[in-house]
Image 1 (cartoon, rainbow, N blue to C red):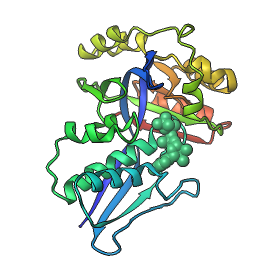
Image 2 (cartoon, rainbow, N blue to C red):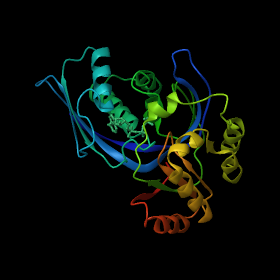
Image 3 (tube, protein in one colour):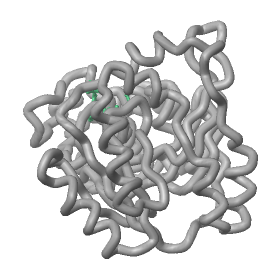
Length: 283
Ligand code: ATP
């Protein structure tokens, strides 16, 4: 049986971390949303060969156990004592190492596909528990809906869908290592967000109020190495974005606009110096 799953990019409407756990990982306090910029992940199972194979259309990605999609198949196969082989084909459209959670979304797509193919009958909440063993963003990517995400990433509280908005997603040619940025967080220096107010505004579907509380506490950290992230963000704001900020640990910057024409205008204005720009709707 073959199943194809859409694996959308995630954006952090807010990203905060109040502390580090004893295991060294950050405790998260984030509001995440998915965008209609997606990889397509096709999963096929077979008796022979009884191995896991990953193929992608990207020359930059590992296709062995370092690929998060491979890890997803391996974990589910081991946990449910399946012996079949799994072939995964990833049509990559989400920029890699961009702060858009592409690897996490591919892994979540593999979990959903295998749950279906093997008729495991796991609910999305059960799949999200399995997902945490892969990476902190994978539980969220099981759902791909506006949500408040806390803990190590395993607590995902869905929030009501918002009216239609457009996002301009722009990745400059910079590579950011997420583990490297996370190791450097100095908790004394972080300027925290008011996520409670953001969540209350989103629950009331009051977007104009919600944008006041969006933000990413890691921006100053990544921007100290890459000031061009701050310049791109400012340009998007000058061009009339409702909000513009970095996603994850960067380098991607996104702008949110309430009209498509405004989003297209921003896209056209920044294309000259940033080639990887997408106008998409939020899911
Ligand atoms: P995060 O913030 O969760 O680290 P990201 O959006 O910054 O994610 P990804 O595109 O997920 O970045 O890639 C992060 C790293 O994960 C890269 O070094 C990449 O080689 C590795 N990786 C493993 N599997 C995948 C995959 N299927 N797609 C993209 N990257 C993958």
